[in-house]
Image (cartoon, rainbow, N blue to C red):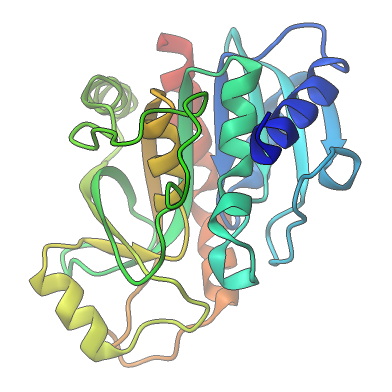
Length: 273
């Protein structure tokens, strides 16, 4: 058995042995959005360091624990803290949790992030459904020998952000009286924030928001045949739009401001799955 496949199964078996019921929905929570894990009923929490082969979160706002349980009638597994390419992890390590989720039986994944607004019609605090993405300057997590258990050698990305789930989310937002943006998310490697010139480039190419995560995870999820819903919390306007410096503190502060709307939206989506 391939070493990567063996590591995924070892982690999945370790997690499954500690659960009463296996999850069907996985959620990956971005900076400042980990509060959703507090909503789980009768949670079972596993710190990453207790799970075989799991990487460790090093970024502020990423707690570094797996939380499993019931949320709106769904058996969920939540990652409170993701792994980024800029932390020095390989792409295999970045998407390792996605493959573990699939091995556990997860078929639907909700990915969230804090992102910079590239579309000048957006404002900090907006929530944006991700309709598509653009990946820049990093390897694909599928590079190298393909493992058929993970997915096919060449996988389709035309509906990576599942249309049906986006329609469902728009319906939930409408019922809640909540404005919900929709647009294209651009992935940049970080950890530096982008320059004003890079933001102008991204806008020209059709990006509405930019961040340093999510896209590798979605590629791995699509490779595995999982349905995906992506949500960005617009934490700040990207470089050059407003005359102010960018900081991670601003990202965390905006996360606090959007948490109630974010939690309501995701809970509403889960209730309708």
